[in-house]
Length: 175
Image 1 (cartoon, rainbow, N blue to C red):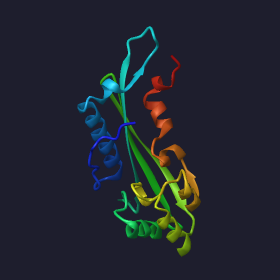
Image 2: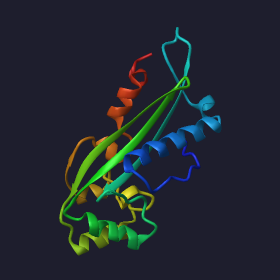
Image 3: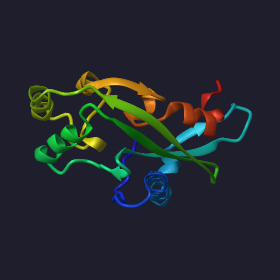
Image 4: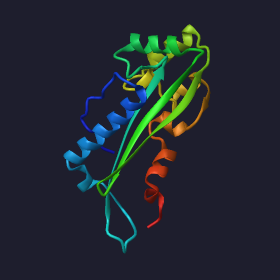
């Protein structure tokens, strides 16, 4: 995995924002020549294909993109706002195979439990919020904050695998 040095846009329509950020990451990877070192796809008898996969995931609450908290106090404020409520996790996914761009957006609804002050403080102290959109990571301790979700778990983790399989089924074929 390569993380391109792209500054993520943080304001605008959430669905357009995640798609645009993913597209900007894909373009940066192509400009940096990453596909030359990237994944080679296809059957041995077919010509190889170059592939770039770029994804941007954000948490949306009350039509506002929360983004990555700047510090512990903002992470705590996010938990205060999301406690006992539903929010949407949106991922924009751009796949470029042999120069052909395919894109989509995945949405998952996540409902947090009503969190105690102690739970919020412990989670912030744990530090898992750092660098995470919405200030939590569902794949580890953040799962204890969640009451339920509707949709793709892999989307909340940060790569909507079902959408990836839909956009680029050739990635999931055996050579």
